[in-house]
Image (cartoon, rainbow, N blue to C red; front, side, top):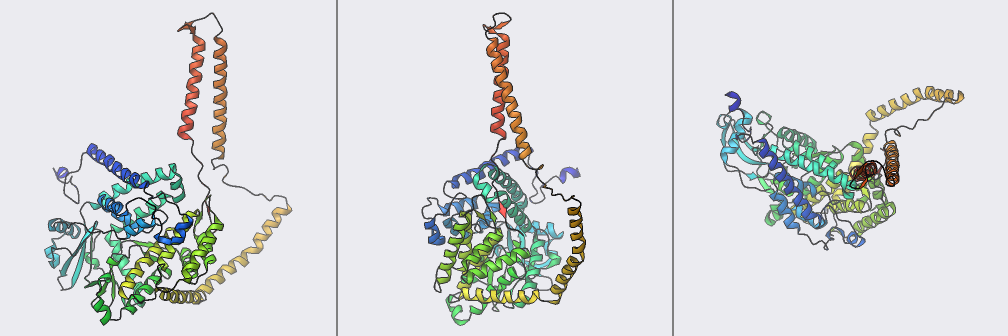
Length: 579
């Protein structure tokens, strides 16, 4: 009895589906996804290239595309929450999506119909193990906001503090995991069977998207991000991150401080006139630059809806579920690239792009360096208020690299998208703000801080220890090399040859040559046997000759089938710069 009673869905309380019915739904869902991808592939999505005219026109190019970006976004939203998040991730990939689609994706809305209060109450009770009335003094049943993954309600704790409850939608985790599994399979086949997949590595991108999205489903990780960002912004008092209430935070329930304010993009002209919001916008830009280049993290979704201006004149930051971590060496290269771009040094920008990226087999280095230099020169020469901002410049660099056969790291696209969103918020707060000057001056301070840190006692001691180890080990290693040379025992081993596809290919060639010779011998033997008058006959022909002909046809057919089924194009040669 107990096993039957507990055999229900943990989120919805519904009985589990029949396996056969679940499999049918999975096939129907896969067909729906494939139909969507094929529909827009001919419209230029995932298959576009850049011509010189488009590069000169910048991000506004691509009018020749006959697709409908707005319908593309609507169809993405209709596919469900996984694809809403997929669209937000695609908006950071100008190397995959044409410019007009990027613009439509950046306007994608994550607003959905609210859940019933009974469903929300059930999730809260399941996560806390208590009825909400015993934990909270009161909860507003009308949500403050609704999204594809969760909705937010205002609540009051027993001690009188106002908090916001972020409640995950029931059953959404299972739906997302199933969709991600289907996407991973499609991406792997695309990488294996298409030239575009071999260039862009869809499987790697889907894998990173999967890790990020699954992490976003655990609100304990988002609570950690809130605490960490709050600590990082300690030197930026105008930037505020609400603190989580850890005692009331669970995997599907996040309880945090309630912030009252106005969306940054909804600030009225009267308020901008009465308050000087320029310092607030500049502080936001500086805080985000520090977050990336000092602390090594990128808020992957800083769209204007996640930024509020509080009643006490600060900027509050929400929705920190999607955070990308940037390793120190990549962070240094991003800093050098952006600093060189702002300073107008195009060749250095190209050099850093090559150092960060992966050179494909058809990489045209001369074209990449030449057109990157031209792009950076146009950006540096433009007047204040021109259309190409820092974020647009970085995204354009990604598109140019893809067109020239250079695969850029995802952090570069994230940097461009983050800057673009921050520029939108900053100009909403202060239309007269010189964003380029703010970025350039703060990058200079970050570089100065890095130089000072490199000469700190801790770093100098660490480098001294490495140098000491080198000096101590050098005589012995040099002696070993000289001894091997003197005794004529120096050997150089080339590893990896036996592990490559070379021997496999040689075996395959030898087997097919042997099978071909056997087939030819059978055909010749059958032809000779045709002239023999005696012996058993079949359909009026010598039976032995017919048997030989049949065996030869079967072997030949097997060779052809095996060639078509197993032969594949060699993986394009890729080259990364030394780490």
